[in-house]
Length: 374
Image (cartoon, rainbow, N blue to C red):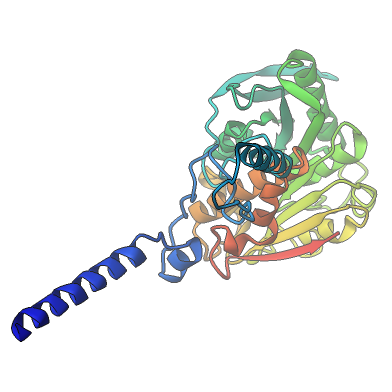
């Protein structure tokens, strides 16, 4: 009898241990737990695109218990539904690290502006039920002597999240670079896009962005055109060329940005002061944006100026190399651009943590340094 009782106790203890183990194993580790475990890959979203809040969203409180009557249950359900509808945006959340899920079509050609031939391309999202359009738009200008198609992975990524990308390639050369004409050519492309894509573009939501010289020209566009209400500089350079500033290659800071009031984002890098001199780089743009209601500067540690170009080709040897992996720099850049555009143009605050608290949203400690002012 004693032996049988001992066996029963042993069996009961083993069962309790197994149930306890299964209970704890049923929990999925959090994002921070995966990061602490050393997962350095791009972290996957905790929810599928379009199926819930971002990883850092505050969870909605859920009432539990048993309703005491049909009337009480109905009232509770109605109140809960009303509160949820008020607190949660109706547009699905799309993880900015990933492609946005919309197909992307392309139109391209050239236009003539004051006798200059200006190539352009429009990357246009394909509407779906959740995002029927019209869409916000963002202009893009490449770095000096680079073509916009060298940044195509970035441009496609942005368009897939529901933004019409207006890419322009204003003509320039080593011998004759006129920043005023290049700005005007880019604005002519914007005019043409708004006239031909009036059904696709929401004209109340337009941002300007560009890399290097393109960042300077985008700032000049924003200063000249009141239709623009968002600005991103991708390692912008307020340069004048080998001979310094001239009337056609002017010093634009602080005047071109100091009166802009909308949200502004400046991206920069920490290793290359040759192609992006310290007195002309992103920090100078950020410091001058004193009227912006929300301004942020994000420095990529170990990155160099050319890391922001997806397909630099021979231009990769024109600037000093950093220690960061270009593919990683570009992945973070893509995420930040989408998060900014969603936040600044669509006023979707669910994306703001990706900009101000990136280490809790897929960026590894030490990869970025963030400055912010409001």
